[in-house]
Length: 305
Length: 335
Image (cartoon, rainbow over the protein chains, first blue to last red):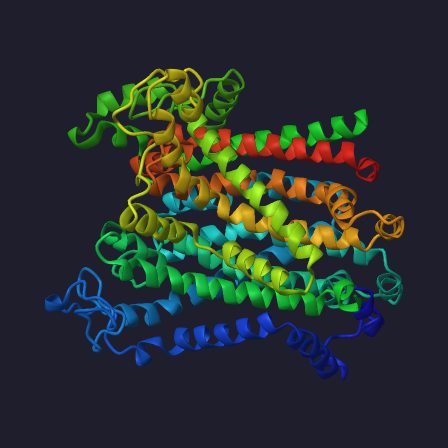
């Protein structure tokens, strides 16, 4: 953290002239990690499919071709190139459903990370700046949330709110948010000891300015890494909830929900099970690769070694 | 040291009350009136409704209900299941050994493979083995385990017919279960083939549940080893002419184990979350499946009690890990 601190020693706003330099430095270190770059490319494809899926997909994701139910993939005997990855038990094109399904996972990731991170950062900042008793109360509440296994808590929350993708996102965001609180609070606490904060305070900076302009930018590195990691956790948890019937509801082509629908056919039609899971795995893997690269590029301790 | 233990124990109390409050509140927030759910399709007359409501105490103020619930919990009374009419506490402890057995096996699987993998990767840093092992670990870490379970079922139960798909043992075998651990009870029963059947049922769930801890342990062991291998005393050991096996295996690994043990302890929560999916897929009669079933059946006392017991278990394990860590590393106590 010391490096960023010396760059912005005056509590300077991030949009100073140093910004492009920092970005270039970041990219330099990020590029070193080949896995991270591959992850970034896969993620770019995933994001592209999420944005333009319905226009790229060869078929309508919910259209049922009743004469072609459980058609195997094109390269297998009995397959057809019209349905490259085969069809599901209702005769819907697997490939189209997978492509359109990308947007649900992407959406889950973006919304959950945004909600959990912004909530967590604000609460974490409050805990870091507030008097000790407020801090204790906030951290005890976070301890309580963290005592429940995340998936179980999300499952019960969704049971309360009613099974749907939106509620699954709310539940996952609530479950992931304490991690941001802890992380932010810990960084704030260590930043508050430093001279630049004292000098900003002496210079008469108000509380809000101290929190968001002086301290927060210097706490961002671990939070960004956490954001990447919880993006993948969010996708996995949403898929797991979908799989248990508590996430997106059929006929939504969400990958976890697709797996749940395909479960009874696993021994007859391998493709209805294999492809949605593979899509989840590849996406999550790509994001985790990126997260590793981000950590290497943003963590100054590893940078020097 | 005593101060440290006491201060840790003191933070346990408010967290425990908070956990109780949350599991209590959840049930009050769940949609559907518990009494109407209990009555089912027959419906219930207004008089009977009032009577039942009084019987369960739902007509009193919420804070009184909470206080009574908390007193009950402290006396080991978690209420009675709507569906089976048995005490939640009894149901939990009848099913818990199944989950414990599965979790222990999964943890052994993860540690036995994860530790050597991490050590080998660290010793061969940057070389082929390191890359291969760490890529595999990252795949394992990113694995949607419910899909992984289905894949294993397709290959090992479907195509190869090696393992059964669900349950803990073949229906052929029936014997008393004094310990609740199928592996032990099947040996104790003396029935031929019972133990083998239990092992075959346990195999796939163990792999599925152990996969993510395995990946986490391998990654953590590698980074802890790398840190330790850079220390001065390792250089000293090397310059003394000790064999690499002795240096890596004894000097380095022993010190690298401290963070690894923490990770192992903290993955109990992960295991329980994983048990929810694993047990549901393999119809494993443990607490994970029990919780999911109860949520779907709207069996409020069970959801409430199960949530509380699981959270308390995670808290106790975390507390123990914290304290052990304090014992191993005196620096932490001072804070």
